[in-house]
Amino acid sequence: MCGIVGGVTDKNITPLLLEGLNRLEYRGYDSSGLIVLSQKNSFDRARSVGKVSNLEKNLKLRNKEINGNIGIAHTRWATHGEPSSRNAHPHISKNTVSVVHNGIIENYIELKNSQIRQGYEFKSETDTEVIAHSIDLEMNSCTSLVESVQKAVKSLQGSYGIGVISSKYPDQIIAARKGSPLLIGIGENGNYIASDQMALLSTTKKFIYLEEGDIAEVKLDKVTIYDLNGKIVNRPAQESKLKAGQANKGNFDHFMQKEIFEQPQAIRDTLESRITNNSVISSSFGHQADEIFRSITQIQIVACGTSYNAGLVAKYWMEDIAKIPCNVEIASEYRYRRPIILDQTLFIALSQSGETADTLEALKIAKKLNNTLKSLCITNSPESSLTRLSDLTFLTHAGPEIGVASTKAFTTQLVSLALLLCAIGKLKGSISKMQESEIVSGLKKLPGLINETLLQEKQIMHLAKRFKNNSSALFLGRGTMHAIAMEGALKLKEISYIHAEAYPAGELKHGPIALIDKNMPVIAIAPNDELLEKLKSNLQEVKSRGSQMIVFEDESSKVQSMDAMEVIQITSNLGRITAPIIFTIPLQLLSYHVALEKGTDVDKPRNLAKSVTVE
Ligand code: AGP
Image (cartoon, rainbow, N blue to C red):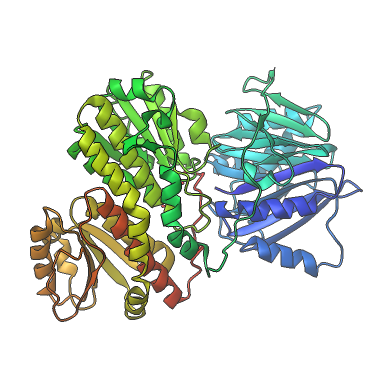
């Protein structure tokens, strides 16, 4: 999930490349680099380890500016080869071809061995370098750069979005994609390529989305696109509605903190125009929504990470309240296991970014396996690949989420899934008007309830101080709270680097209880629901084994506080739909403050990227 940006313009391209890289940093920040064809048609390249700001510093230290009208740039999330300058893109072959790549070349070892035999020298440990050499090799027998790329990509197995420039063809960039996103930006003073329109929004709003197997020849005043079979095709440009505005932290120290506090507004925005008189407007899921929802007999949700956890909550809701069978699966498993997809299944792809490679692939495979399948994507990204592939789209309207750890995207996904629950249940006759009205009025109370819950921050800060020296933690919950426990554990792992696991509280005695001692803190979620008494017994089992405990409870849950047990009251009388959303908030705050105590990079934790566009 690296980020690519490039362009052919009538002015110096370097500032545009740097701006694009900054906007693409959410795709990876292990290293970054750019290359420009100078006036003398020679390559001028700069690469740095770490964030784009390091590349900017590196450029400032040079005594000569990198200047030219054509260039490509890359921000990397390492797959093959450690994050280092020599593994950073762009890569060069024989001073003639330079390539930036997002994706994975699966047969790179085989290609590398053959290229070494043909005299090519490898300067990096990446899989990308073979692409540069393959193109250089083809240039010996081809009459254009586009033809060389067309031939070279035939030997590649795996996924790629690539940008290619050559000192022999100094008026063009070649862009090619298979399995990784890539688009063309059409500007007034030039034409551009990028992994995501965000990179180019301050330059153009006109985009052509390349399709699988497309190869584009991008020149100053002309873009020519060839399809999979090498035929010239017309791919119409679309006008983007997105705004270029750079997200900022306002008065907050981190994007994650800001995004936690934005949740009341984000939920208001998710609900806006989707409900009327305590009833869900089902057509907000799309024109065909009513027809599709009436016809389905089961639901398959597929997602990754935090989005998967949101899907798990929805499974409880869908089966218990709307009485419709619902399965949830991790996309990277689903896509490879040849699932049986019954007719009348609604496939739901849940994804903040709408670009997660595993989720996209799972949807494509499901469509191939059953061509009657109807699909809905719930995403925060209006013009993402997922929206283009799905029959129905529902936007979460959370606003840009910059922190790598997902917060407001999760709670707005839950709100969206609750609206979906009502829409499906109502159309299938399994949810009464009264039930729907109760659910919707509960959703409308969420912004106020979240604001109340955020007032617990001070108390949670104190807990975080004590927590920071732990090396592991167990999160417990039952029912939907198991999914919330999973989300709490994921948050703690990703930003504080503390090992954390989540278990359904009733499962503890089947093994994990062996881990419990005074060094294994347990965080439990105790809403006042029908499983409360069972959970209280589980807490006793843990307590009697000496664990330090933190219990987040509903005011009416009345969990008895004991030695080495901190009970924090959240709010009272939460319903089945509102409780999982509200109990998420203290867990987000806990992981945020533990990370602050530990001094980790909260918004850009190590080894991660905001959008995972490789498998
Ligand atoms: C959550 O905090 C993550 N960083 C990660 O698990 C994320 O939810 C996952 O990669 C899925 O992303 P998506 O929602 O954009 O598909």
